Length: 86
Image (tube, rainbow, N blue to C red; front, side, top):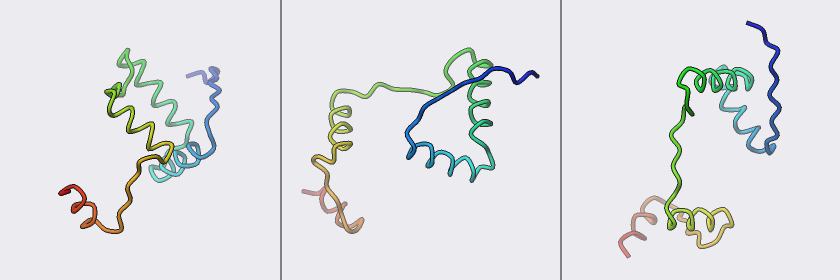
């Protein structure tokens, strides 16, 4: 198979590093992962992952968490469980 097609992607360095670490643990290169992804799209004739649009509440909570707003932290699982009883 001719390997003449080129895909150029820009991605933030932290996401790239985290992803490449996971791929390496699977014995897979980024190029192999992208080829696999493209093959799955071609075979299925659709996007190979299930995507969901979050409802308004979930979207709001996620947006706040990305900004470190309204975040609770716990020192142990028992503290977490106790907080849900309040």
